[in-house]
Length: 358
Image 1 (cartoon, rainbow, N blue to C red):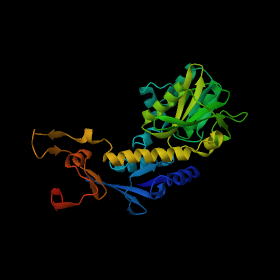
Image 2 (cartoon, rainbow, N blue to C red):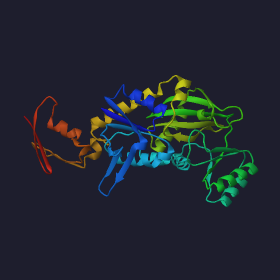
Image 3 (cartoon, rainbow, N blue to C red):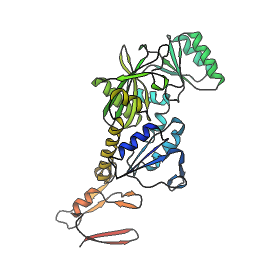
Image 4 (cartoon, one colour):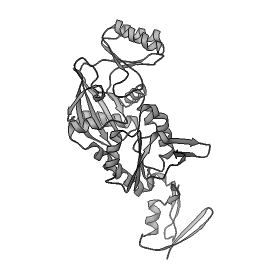
């Protein structure tokens, strides 16, 4: 099987490609900055460095929030015919903290109370009625960047005035005291494969490794695992990091990261997270290609007409196109009793294909 990783070439991406090479026949390293998507009323074409992107059985696409639209376009164009662990819409949801919290709320996943104001006047009314301290956040950002702490109404108002002058939208969020600690877990499919507790530096509220935080191995209980896995599903991602805080009421989700760094959590836990991801991608791709379609034969067959004693059976179905190849539904192979050791005569003309065993 052939796979590709589309990314910005981080160290974590290099680790993942190295791990994927142990499972897939070939793995290509595709620079996200060289991708373009051409759209027309009839089709969408994905190009890499000006040429059509090669056909792959699996594509793992990830990158910075600055490339969210490109990632969504690429995934939307290729998702029907290629196994991809992150849905197109996830790149919009996961890279926008407001949308993330909106989807978490829809799935009834515990999270800090979050406010979005439509104007500075409305924001100040919120600031007048909430308890302090609070957190102010930019909707987009990673590594703890764009996260600000305000211990009083005066401090929050001052920050808000600065943000207003920069014409930056922001979220107001309930502050949860955790002594500068948070928890990051890596979700891969229906499992949490690694977890660490991060502790901020003295005088720092952000526990992110990029902000100087220190990580140590952490083993979440079943309840926290369920919350993290559901958060990943809520955003449409099979592979991601979920950041949580341990509040007085239990774990709450503060962020879902679609392109997490692997160095910190690998060092803290001694778990080969890249290998866990690569193995999962291989197994899911194998299932995807064996079925011939992501939905499976049971979903795509619209009508089956079988007459008792008939020598032929008619099937009305869609065809699965993989680049320049056509994959027949699994049911066709079973009914035709085809075997890869046999030889066949294939008769082809426009709009019609006949396959006959020699």
